[in-house]
Image (cartoon, rainbow, N blue to C red):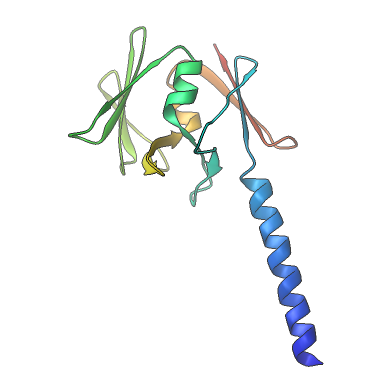
Length: 142
């Protein structure tokens, strides 16, 4: 009897945690009022609690160009007179040559370069809001 109760409690716990995990990671990104469609890697919350996105989709939705320097493992985002460089695995990055710091790092995930959405969007002169009820990141140019 004790084993059944323990099994039931553990089963309920696991089901609850799976539901919480799915809810946390079911994130929608809206840029300039348009839903951003991600083909393979979806936005997710990393271990630092930051929303991570494949950089190309959001940057291009904001009118930026994305390049990759394989030799230095650096993503380069440019828009007009703004140049952002984020090196994989580093919390340090630059905007027009000026050093800045993030609280998490850019990384490679399933073959995609992913970055914290807030830092990349804000450095492209955009406002980033979080709608907790609908689990949406809303980005609009300033």
